[in-house]
Image 1 (cartoon, helix red, strand yellow):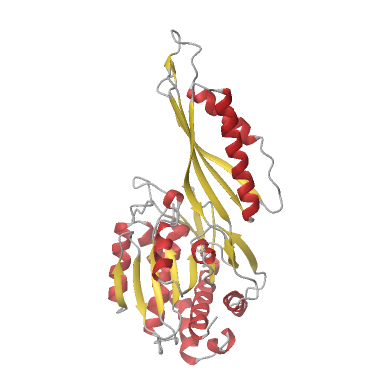
Image 2: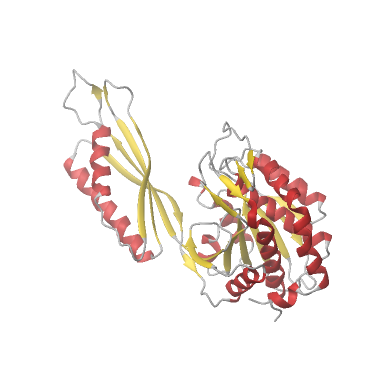
Amino acid sequence: MLTVQTIAQQPRVQEALKQFDTNIEALIDRAIAIQQIPAPTFSEQERAAFVQTTFTALGLHDISQDQWFNVYARLPGSRSNGHPIIVSAHSDTVFSAETDLTIRREDNKIHGPGIADNSTGVAGLLTLAETMRHFELQPERDVWFVANSGEEGLGDLIGMRAVADRFPTGEYIVIEGGMYGSVLHAAIGVRRFEIAVATQGGHSWSEFGRTNAIHVLGHLIAAIDGIDVPRRPKTTYTIGIVEGGTSINTIASSARLLLDVRSVDNTALQHIVGTVETVVKQTRRTFRDANITMTQIGHRPSGKIPRNAMLVQSADAALAYVGYRNIQHLAGSTDANIPLSRGYPAVCIGLANSANAHRLDEYLDTTHLIQGMQQLLLLTLTAGQNNT
């Protein structure tokens, strides 16, 4: 078994690690170029075309794009007979196509919607492939580079589901632009629902007294907000969107909310979902002339691998090698949910620090971006040599 420390001492690997110091501005420029391409969930095709063109220019093998705008490329292993390594970064963002993507640089910080999540992740994926090609770094096992779609919002990890279907024996390294210093090897379970109310509605004056769909939704929101959830295992709920009504002087005939429920423990998750279902049933009995429906619109399954799994240990060792000691082992909701839920080894790592994700004032702190790329290279090379 080759360790991170052993691989890091190989002459070509040493050269590759050092070049990140001098080429970091090229990586930043690439991240900005990607950030400037709008890529809302379900509309990633322009960014996918950029990735596919870059893969082609790098001379990678078996380049293709599927119906979900996932883009695949292979770096052949020296043996190509073991389980492949899949290195992925999601290409979609939470921002609409009309969002102002203006970039502002301030010292080591780059401000702009989606710059960290996940333009830097995609740029890191491309730069990793470029580095391995340039320095002729060839692990024993095939390495597949994948820019996948559908990670954000209601994408429900549709891109990674297709990737995991294609590589059922793979081991997965998922890249995020932020989150440097963390190794995520446990997946939070997430379920999402639309709760909709439909009523007869009417005029606010002449039909006063009829059931108002928005008022019913208000009762539902208040009841959900009264649900007790455990702190351990951590369990949460959030009503993220509320919509309904026609005008200020109309008794609303329709209204809906979108509910996000998540937990690190599947039993706790099922309990809170069951509690919400009970709230809906009770509200139906209270408002018998309202049609209330609860529909699941997303399911991110949970899963994990242990801290002593070789892939986790290699991720830790890669961070330690580049000088980071205060490693955080996290559970989260990322593309890694899919392989972890299916029992495939997977970790999610970050390339830099960031803040204000999913906000217009998001920023990337490039202070540790060099080390972030170094740990990614070392982890990929180590995983590619070992049967983890």
